[in-house]
Image (cartoon, rainbow, N blue to C red; front, side, top):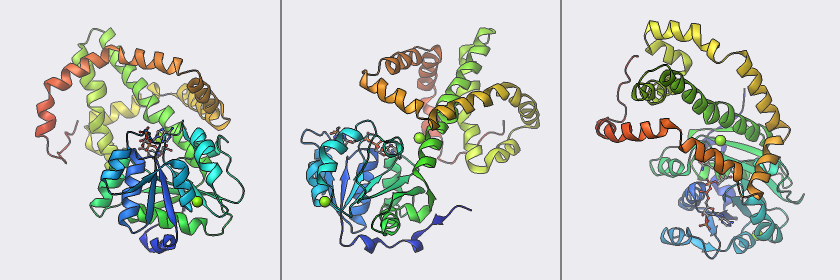
Length: 341
Ligand code: NDP
Ligand code: MG
Ligand code: MG
């Protein structure tokens, strides 16, 4: 029974006397700044002098200044530069310009949770995190629709942190869809675990193992690509709409019986143990330490791994097939019926 907030729980006029500094004008930054502005909130965008985003923000009719100056003008600071640069931006531009009672807000809790940013005690620290890429946050708002989001309070010195964060969430359109209360710890650890174990890491490893197993056994790369990668979208769409049962109900009985009897043999107890190990590295900070050091060293391991991924045979096969079948994508209506198997 987690708290979920909607439009009735929030009041944008809470921010009437505030100025919001949106630092960064990328994926999230442009969406937050434009949505806040159209919701009647005073916004100033903070970008470095050389920023490639500057002209876009200005062309969109927003006030743009440096990050330091934006923070100085603002009472509410929304930190929407990439996570890896946030500690430096905090040190150089934010901290020197924070005042008692200001709000410092994030869209992801990484730097606060792992102590890479340690704000003063007299500043509220909050999180409003849309659960979607920025261009959708913007598009949904323009279509009078919402984007689900998370809200967390790390520090509430004013006593108003919650009300202000909810007002912000409403102004960017999140309460239209629903805002779930969480903590910095839960948001960060579940996010890192999810992307490592299941969403990005787990699923690509599963696809590659399946593809390699078929190709090594003499099946054609094209067939293996379709079977193990391309069709994944159809299955995930069914899961998205109706959960695992929605998917099982839509595939053939043969697929269902085969999957139910074999699935746990593939992703077995040892995988579960690996997941627990990966979760522990997230919880004890080992992963984050590794990632910080990797960045400080100029990303050598990251570079190598990306190169290897790029050179995997499945990429060349996929590129050829996607070109060949591009017409099918274009012809497909948006909510096309999914084949049953
Ligand atoms: P982006 O990579 O899109 O941010 C790019 C913006 O940051 C640009 O305007 C860029 O301007 C500016 N920027 C980059 N480096 C600096 C710097 N050193 N000083 C000042 N400005 C800089 O970020 P995202 O929108 O992807 O992420 C922002 C936050 O939102 C992160 O905390 C992320 O975890 C979170 N988040 C992101 C989601 C997403 O879908 N992308 C979803 C939910 C949360 P310049 O031209 O100067 O480089
Ligand atoms: Mg200020
Ligand atoms: Mg994530």
